[in-house]
Image (tube, rainbow, N blue to C red; front, side, top):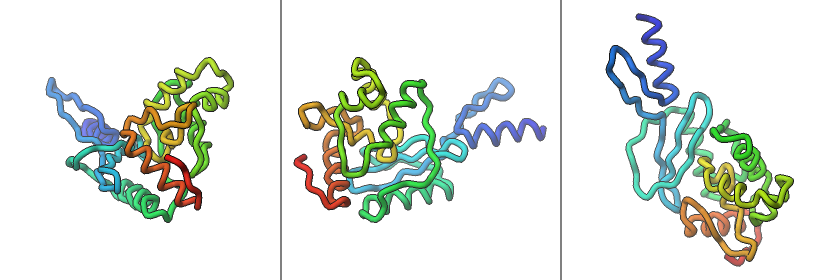
Length: 184
């Protein structure tokens, strides 16, 4: 019995399904939905890491932990213009290539932008531009892995799963934080 309860607890912590005696128990993910100046943010925890930060149009039910509340505080400080870096652990699952792309995105400085061709070049192969753009679009850690800092080769805002209005706002916000003016 103790082993069964331990497995159920581990499943709950990981936001997984638990199957026991032919019954399926859906376990809610450990999550927190917070307001921001550009809509709600859905934060999800996977063990000791943030695994998702996604934009939502409306508030949903959540199941927060003290860890996610600390993450929310750091995001609030970012939106207030008081924080430029995040120091909470985060992790998302993807292919080796996606992971490389996401790591490269974290090297784009606050207030700066690059285009998709520059991203492909940073990855070592101009021909991977479409794959890099696809991986960029699969990023599940909005703001922290700054996929919003990648723009079109013509300098226009393109391709943001959170919506172009949010991408525009984030770039303007970061530009102001750095004392720059961007023409977006």
